[in-house]
Image 1: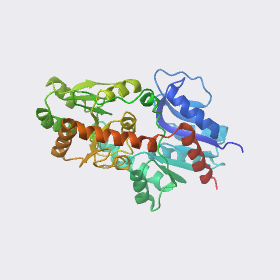
Image 2 (image 1 turned 135 degrees about the horizontal axis):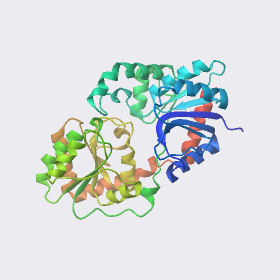
Image 3 (image 1 turned 90 degrees about the vertical axis):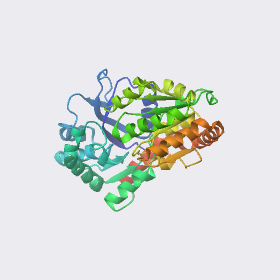
Image 4 (image 1 turned 60 degrees about the horizontal axis):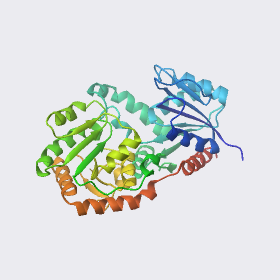
Length: 364
C-alpha cells in the first residue's frame, strides 16, 4: 500500500542534521508516510534535506503563501499542524491554493488560551483577543483533531462539541532515561524541577512553597533546570542559598539529575500531558505535582506522586516536606512510577503507525 503524502507544519525550530532523538522519530514516520516539513529555522541549521523547508525570520507572516506553494508542488493528501493558530494560517493557505483541498489535521498539545496569558511577558496579554480568535477558528474548523491527553481531549470537546478524532500521546524519546539501571534514592533528600521558567509552570508558587518547606528539611536541596521570563524568582532563591539553578541540560544530564533527586516537582497551572513526568517514571522517581491538566492522566494521587491544587502553596510545601522527609514514602512513589512507565513508553514505530491511522481516517 502506498504511503499517504503528508505535509507537517508547525513553529518548532529544527537543526539539520537532525539530532539522534528526532531522527528516530522521522525515520519511523517515513516508513508510514511520504512527508515534508514546513517549520522554523534554528540558528545553527543548514538547509541540507529536501524534506524540510525551514523558515528564518518571521514564520507566521508568509505562512499562508508557503503553504499554498507546498500544496501546489508536493500535493499533500493531508496537512498535520501542531497548534491551533498555525492551523488557521494553514487553512488560509489552503484557500489560496484553490484546486486541491487536503484535510487539515490539528494537534492540540495544551490549552491554547494560556499561550498569551501565562507565558512570556505580560505585554503578550494584549494579543489575547486576536490569538484566541485564531485558535478557536482552527479548533472548530479543522477537518480532524488529535489530542495528546484526556485533558486536551476535553478542551477540544468543549470547543467543537464533539470528541477529538484521536487521543495520541506525543512521541517522547526516552533513550537517555533508559540507558542504565534505575538508581536508589540519594542519601540526602533533593527535589528537582525541570521546565521553562514561565507563569504557567507556577515558578513563583514553587519558590514560595520551597521557602516555607526548606526550614523543615535540613540538608535538603532544590535543583531548578530551565530558562524563561521568571528566572529572577529563581535567582533570588539561589542568592539566598536555597536552590541550585542550571539553565540548560542535555537529556543525559537531566537523567543524571533525576538519579540525584528524591522526587520531581511539577507545580504547573496546566500541562498538556507532562513529558518530564514520563522521564521521571523511567528513572523510578515519584512526583510532587499540581492537580492540573494532563498531569492527572499520568499521576494518581498517593500512588506515583502527591498532588495538590495549583494555587495552594501551603499544600505544595507540605507535600514536599512529606516526600523529602519520609524515605519509605518516596521509595513507594518511585516504585509505582517505574511500574507505570511502560504504559507511557511509546516506541517511534508505534507512534508513526497511530499517526498514519489518523491520517487515513481523515482521508475517508
